[in-house]
Length: 377
Image (cartoon, rainbow, N blue to C red; front, side, top):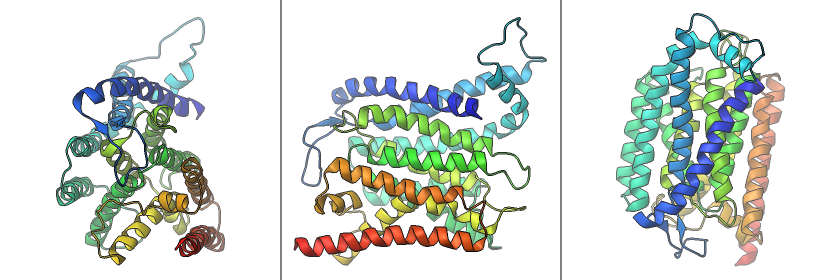
């Protein structure tokens, strides 16, 4: 298993880190710079386009892996040598799953294409603002295409039309959740790293109900993103020298959303409550989105109107520094997400305890926020 983790994470980490330097150098020449403004918390103009680095960090290793897979699958026998190769264990793992991976390849590249469309739309928005109606429309079209291609949430409802609608809303919702979360140095990339890592751990530790084997394809799908985000974080940690931009937040939100749909959380001997694992892992981004939208609607404004009412901003209003606010959200993401690792191992009562703990954590934060805002008025 360690070879899968290293083979998926390290190449994408290196590519993202190196690509980040190139983007930092060339972005200002193309006007891809985020300037401080009335709702911005950074003090100096900062290059955007970090999403390009993350996109490259995901696509290039997958392309190389596809090429290597063709070679390995067509080989009649593994290479022989008097000395065991350092990469021999990884080679054996790939060769043993080559047939299954080749079967999944067309579906994988369909998803890469859909993610690339969203990345390009986000990049266009980074250069010149696109109306939210157009952005939301394109996101919905891409999500609908993915769902109609055969990916739907695994829930116990015998209503295909309802599953289709819920799956589209889930994908579009997470795209915008990670986009809204991208308002402080290291926030979206860090939360994305934690969320994708926990989901990948669930996939590798919890067997597929049908095959009783780890869900290696989805696990690797997520780990490649983890590497790309870790490499980007080397440029985005406070004080950030590179921003993710809409190109990156759209890509990250879509990638994680699709991974939760591809994963198998139900069936066989798997307890029914295991389907709630994605909700545990993604509780914090969802909480941020719901509370921000609620505040905007209550104030009679558009839910897509940018402001400084995000969860991170509200923590700063309570007296935390920006790095402390980001770290607090990291810890909350880990706290709510780690329960997903246990959902496969507990009974219904245990699942209720895990979900109750998550709700209590979010409710506690909400109470502290409300008290802090009232005291500040």
